[in-house]
Image (cartoon, rainbow, N blue to C red; front, side, top):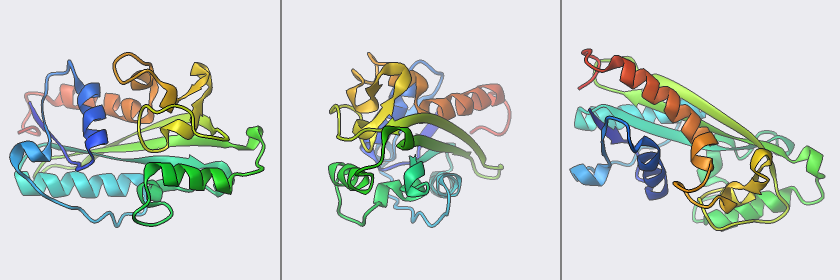
Length: 205
């Protein structure tokens, strides 16, 4: 089954490819098809933005397309960065800049009130069919300083209590445990279950 990853984010494509490894998919990225498409994320939720990306890539290529939209929600910040996580603080900031921004806004906030969660919405779209959305959530805490250099985005400041470390301290996609419990892994697992169940039916191309 051919499956197009509807993203231009190389970190995200690498993680999705790793999570899909071993499943019965021919996983494609836009560059594999020489497709260049920038989708304006005008939605007001993770799910809305995931649908926009999946449907745009599917309409352009005619392929079954899978898109992820995900981010960090911090309770003490009223749910921010939320669905604006990738653009939090304005354009041009690096991941490190955004991590430092979140930490500065939480300065003085005690550990018990630094609760946060990663949320992922994965949309699956194919021409002429209803787009499906699958969500995953993982709960944690925001550290007082970045820890670890693995992963990407807000991973170095997201502490996952069951592992007693941040996602940034995870040994790596294959060796570590993040790939089993992350928000993206949970959402993708549900999407794969749906796609596997639909194999052989006319929903798939």
